[in-house]
Image (cartoon, rainbow, N blue to C red):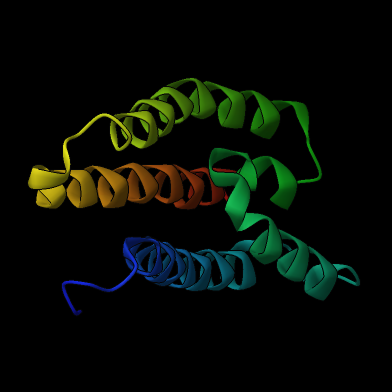
Length: 125
């Protein structure tokens, strides 16, 4: 990337790559793990599209059943503060430490989507 390029382009591209990778993982997990029934395709699509919700993905996959909802909420308690602190820290890191800012950005989103994939795995049990 050019040095004078808009830094927000980098953030958008990195977010989209992370989102696409984890959405693919969640789609695979949902397709393989959800019950094969008349609503299978609908649930797979709904779960895949809701992967942006991070840890709530598992609850969405099982139509908010109490056990999956509780597990997703417990994971949300861990993932949301990490995402919040990481994204907030990006605004306070000086421009001379751009590598640290970008690492924090990527790490925050990876944690968020990792908890989403893990939530989907748990919901498939």
